Length: 256
Image (cartoon, rainbow, N blue to C red; front, side, top):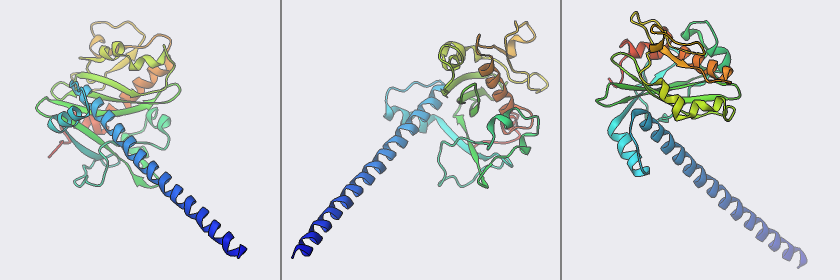
């Protein structure tokens, strides 16, 4: 009798534990979905801001993104464009197994390792409809952390329209100024390439002159390593043998 009573209590306790575990798992799944959804909206909103659109709420974000933004996904190893993107997320960060080494490397863009556990990685490139604007996701290495941004560039003369850093953990008051509107606005209308299509953009503490002013953004005072990191990031993603260079020069087409 006592054994039966003990068994019933044990079964009840196990049932309660199972129910609690199921509730906890369901809660985590729902929370993860909500978290992913919020992150998606945040990224979409950042892309729209980079394109020059302001949104008041999530509904407006979805409407404007669908109306004004298109995208293509490219393989970073061979620059091929994916035809079937249904099973791929819209927002992917390309990652190298040694980001700092890769961005500071003098090797060819295609020589870099873009494989994680032998799985090829891809990156999306966004285009603003009827606006001659391409938005590129870029990332690099700052002083303390990886830094992530979107940069919009005019297709005609390759001048920078806007830049937004949306994730960074640099020193407050110093390197973290890369995320300040005041510093980001200095990028507007700057050119990446000269008339011979050579990379000529730079971030420098040196005083600019008539020759360098169209290509130069002033470095942040007291944040040399962060400034150098941003410069290396731009040079890496837009150098002559890069995917982004080939897109801007019309060698690779979007949305065709």
